[in-house]
Image (cartoon, rainbow, N blue to C red; front, side):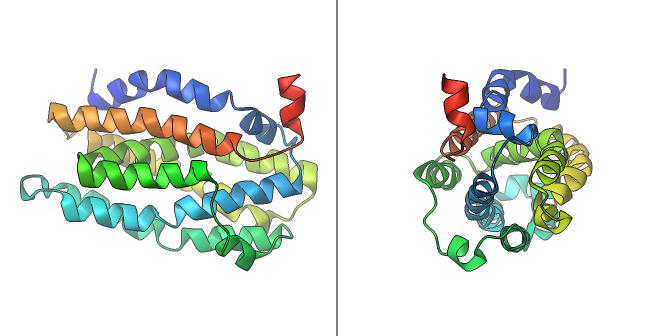
Length: 223
């Protein structure tokens, strides 16, 4: 079993916890309101706006002995630049206020996800951030296109209101192959454990972000 397979196996429970969140289940079925979709995009904007700074932090703290990772980090940075603006475009296309979203305060759950990753990289091990990359990219390949199509159909929103989800659903399929090749080159047991730890925790933290988004389906699932 290579490391990527170990990572996938050891994050199975946390991944299943994420996929059981009512807001996600309803989103995949298109059973959410426009307000819920905009609320989701607003939280996405806040954490996605940190993706490039996350990667810059990671790259600046990688020791010289592991500088081969810089190439992968730079490639991810180039791919992620400006994606938060795509989200603001989607908010506007869905009838929301892009500037209100830009200047809003993220939910505490979103702030925790952001703070956790900076803290882990600066206090423990910067290589662990590959766990966050795994969480985001594996999740988007599984749910992005399906969710976008379902919500678009149910709410009658234009395709341009889903550029973030659709683009990530398509892009991250190739990204996952690149990610798999990259992490399989990581042989240091401490780095491997850091990646697994961050992946497990960010699946759970992202599940909490989704739970923090109010929508009418919550009461139905709780009943």
